[in-house]
Structure formats: structure tokens, C-alpha cells
Image (cartoon, rainbow, N blue to C red; front, side, top):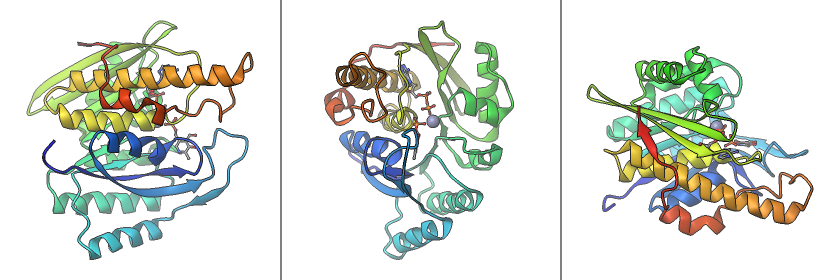
Length: 288
Ligand code: ADP
Ligand code: PLP
Ligand code: ZN
């Protein structure tokens, strides 16, 4: 776009591999966003490996970083993006930051991936979020609604709207057949409601960092297609398919007949630059 977009992304950093900010920053940059990253943790690698080392950023240091930005008038963002939030004090600081950032830019869009660490503490942050991207488990935990069919999926999304989110996208549900994942989304725009479903092939592997990539892509595509949640979701899901197919092919090439190790199945993100820039739509949404 011609107006500069600047995202403040508060997520995990891993030295090796792709989750959190490592998963989100590159696609956002490729799609034309300035990305300022605050690393909520710095780990050697993601926690699905047998071992990991590193440190967690505490709320006080988060506050320090923010006050440094403020002191230099560097807090003019168009988007705030958050992922996993480890503890209550960190959550409270993030809340203060959202409020402050929205004072500086009332049009700021807060995209919250409500990754569940412990309990329902994250409920508190939903009222500040413009866009939320829970997975099925997180949507159920936040709303108390068990998602067993489209009707209950819509109820859960409704509840998240009532809690304050204007756009809700549940990145995956098990509503499809065994070999399909179903993404459902919903937006409320001054009273008018759009809800949709996208079925996608389920690839036979477990990936990590996918939720973080999904949310970053959705942020970008909802910016470029702000009046078309259907197209934004289609581009997001279609990109995910490309990245994960490439990732699985690479993992198989490396692992042979063995189950791929976490290192072998790290996202092939850089290799997917072209698909990220100009996704070809392979998964179509239908309106509900
Ligand atoms: P999280 O990683 O936050 O739990 P999901 O499991 O919903 O989030 O994954 C986010 C997105 O990643 C999904 O919408 C889907 O596009 C893609 N994805 C993840 N795992 C698979 C898989 N096994 N097959 C196909 N797509 C997948
Ligand atoms: N951040 C860290 C440090 C992790 O270890 C993980 C998963 O292991 C994630 C984030 C989240 O990854 P996903 O997007 O697959 O939920
Ligand atoms: Zn997630």
C-alpha cells in the first residue's frame, strides 16, 4: 500500500528454526510491512526439541523497551501482533501497551493469537483485540463452548465477537473428514456479519510455528483486502499449504523412511518467498 505499515510484533525468538517472530517477521517484510520485533523469549530452538536453552523476557524489561521507544517517539504503529504470553505480569504490560498504542493511533489494529499457556487469563486481552486467531482448543477454552459442528463453531465465534473481537478466525478445527482441516472465520462490520469456512488438505505430519505464520499472513492479507475477509483467508490458507507441502517434501527427503526430527521439519519459509509474495489460491472459502 502507499501508507506505511508498521507492525510491533511481540513473540518468541529462536536462534535456530522458525516459530514466533522468526515465523512472522519474514513474511510480513516480504509483504511490505515494517516489522519491529520484541522477543518475548530468546531460546536456542523451539520447545518441541529434546533440549532447549535460553531466557524469558520479563514484564519489567518489556516495559523498559517500550519506554525507550516512547522516549524517541517511535511508537506510531499501524498494527500490534502478539503470540504466546507467558505470565500475568507480562499480560498486564501488554494490555497497558495496547491502550497506549491506540491512544497514539486510534486506528491501530491489534492482532492477538491467543496461545494458551495456562488458563483463561488471556480472556482479559480479547476486549482490546481487533482480530483474534485461536485454534480450536483455544477457542473452546476462551468461550467455554465445545466445537463439535458448524453451529457450535459459529456460537464460539459469536461469543468472541461479544467479547470484543471484530474478526475471528479459528485457524483449524477437526470438523472435516480425517484428511481435511477446516478453518472458520467471522467478521462483524457495523452490524453486518460475514462467516465462512475453508477446507484444506491435512498433511500427514506435525509442524511447529504454523499458527504464528498463519496469524502473520492473515494480518497482512486483511490489510490488503480489508473489505474481503474471504479473499484474505483464502490467500492465507493457500500460502500455508504451499509452505507446508514444501516443508514436508524437504523433511521426507532428509529423513528417508524415518519420522522427521524437529530440525528436519522446520518450516521452509525462505524457500517459499515467491509463494508468500503472490499466493495462488488453491483453497476456496464458502460463506456460511
Ligand atoms: P496452531 O499451530 O496455533 O495450533 P493450527 O494447528 O490451526 O495452529 O495451524 C495453523 C495453520 O497451519 C492451519 O490453518 C493450517 O493452514 C496449517 N496447518 C497446520 N498443521 C497442518 C497440517 N497437518 N496439514 C495442513 N495444514 C496444517
Ligand atoms: N514459541 C515457542 C518458543 C515454541 O517453542 C513454540 C512451539 O513449540 C511456539 C512458539 C508455537 O508454535 P505454533 O505456531 O506451532 O503454535
Ligand atoms: Zn497457535
